[in-house]
Length: 101
Image (cartoon, rainbow, N blue to C red; front, side, top):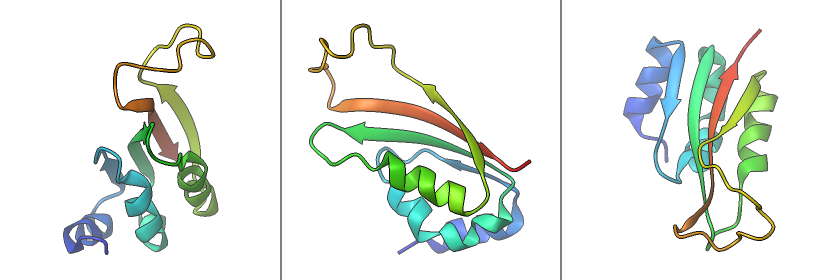
């Protein structure tokens, strides 16, 4: 269930920042019916090796609500096919910049 404080924020502001260490997909899917109130959104996406990746669901929710987006990798990985076992529990971190034209 979406926190009521976030719902209030969406009613009062046109920019939304989501940096919640792995729960961002759940929150965006939960509040997607409120995203029409947002013009710009920043999401720090986290993917953990032990969990299913859900980036496509997150980006799909943004697309369905009329956002265009740009992706920026936070971590630089040389030779991604060779270096699959990172030292951290995350296998992907992205900054997602969503905006309306």
